[in-house]
Length: 503
Image (spheres, rainbow, N blue to C red):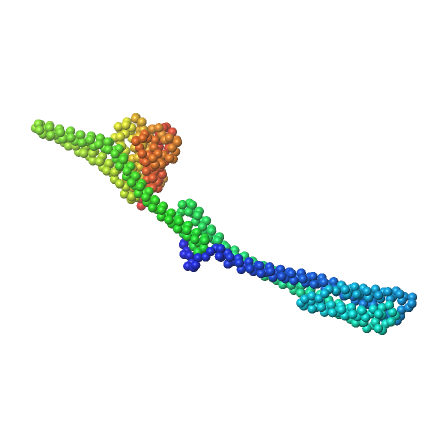
């Protein structure tokens, strides 16, 4: 994951982005809802007006019917007979009374344009009322001419009133339909604006929140797995960007501290290895002194014999000269080999990786501790193949491992027992096995046997660092070290290392 430098811009905030994104949408929604409510209110007013106009239109039709009844009386006034005069005149009075009751049901004038139209309608109502008032003196009489003109005018005014109410009703219906269309268009527009805003907010939320959160989640997972080389893409200087920078800085500091700690541990491990090697050198001191004293004693004895023969002037000195010189040369070589082994063991690690022949090192270490085995009555058996198979490593470190394992086997072996050292080559692996006939490994220790300062030896007999150091050395060489109890008794330690393939 490549690191992207943050954009050089003033720091932003997710809260600010949120409000800048949703506030316009909120205002648009509130404004749209206000317009819709206003239109709905107007639609309600229009419906009420249409209802009122329909009521007044019905009244106008009723009024026309009543005036038509009066018109029939006027037209038949000169034809009334004595037999039907009371019925006809009573019917005329009923029509006149009904017309006045209908006129009384018309409303009062309002304000605005609708109020002006209502005023015109009421003016027509007033005119009709006046014309009907002119009929009062003539209703109940058998006369036609005086009542003809008021009835005619009242009928015309009633027709105009009905036509005006019908026209107003149609106008209100058209307005209502237009308002309904406006509301539908506004709702559609509101839906488009809302959908576009939500889509934009979703894209913005994915880019500014979900993508950085997914990156932080992956970084946290890798960080939890121990990976401290975090490379985060920081595109925005907001809260999540700050969190990413903080996490990356923290990971860098932890990585620096980890490297420093590893360097210190490596340094302490080298110091501990040198200390352990010096301690083992002290253990070897007695055996080395014995190994060197024996050839020195033989050399001294031969030299003394030669000196005595020369002092006595005996001829036998010349005869035994060759034998004594051979003994002196052999014992001197023996002392040289012992010191060479000791120097090789005490040589500090080089840190280089080079071919190491484990079979040869196994024999050298066995020869170094052979005197200690003989002193304890323990036999050391070495089984190593020829030709030897090398591994890639540091000879001093691997020699230290073999020495620690063999020394532990000697400490665990009873008198009269034996220790087996063997080297096996299996596929691309080289295995060294060290077996003893001691009491075996305590089951309560388990894998803790390779932890520092864990030991089953008596106090003062060991520090519990030998196996821990050996385990670290073998692991650093790409191998493994395991311990197990043998079915026939005793313990088995197996060093498994990759075989070195020479080009």
